[in-house]
Amino acid sequence: MSELFDYGFERYRKLTLFAKDQPVTKVKMWMGNKSEVEVVANQEIVFNVPESKSLESIRVEVNYEGPVQAPIIKGSKVATLKIEIPNYKTLQYALFAKEDVGKSGFLQKFGQKLGYKIKSFATKLSS
Image 1 (tube, rainbow, N blue to C red):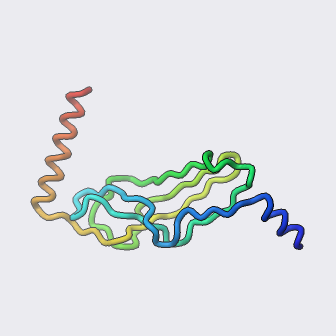
Image 2: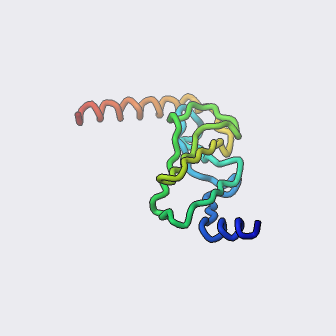
Image 3: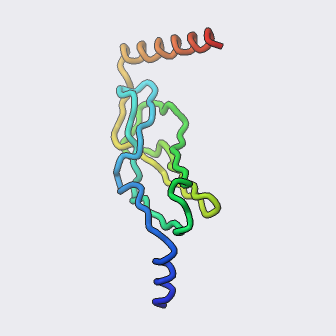
């Protein structure tokens, strides 16, 4: 049994990417009283990687359909963290809103819609 443990400790390293409730990133909000909300994992994100794998080859990305529509309640799932270790495994973790985000007021809505229209118009002009 001890030989099995020795084998594992010699050939694998433990990586901790994020602690529980540690902010991972921010995602854009639409029609919210805030323009972004931080997202967190509801668990520690830890995994073992073979020593033969280069840390630079590990790919980490956050996926979500955004911008996220307000209102959002703290703890709502809003994104997914995807970790790819080439030729080994792919891991996925749910990410949750760290705080409530309410709907924007009239002036904020007007400003957001106007900004979107101007951005769309500018994009069409540059095409």
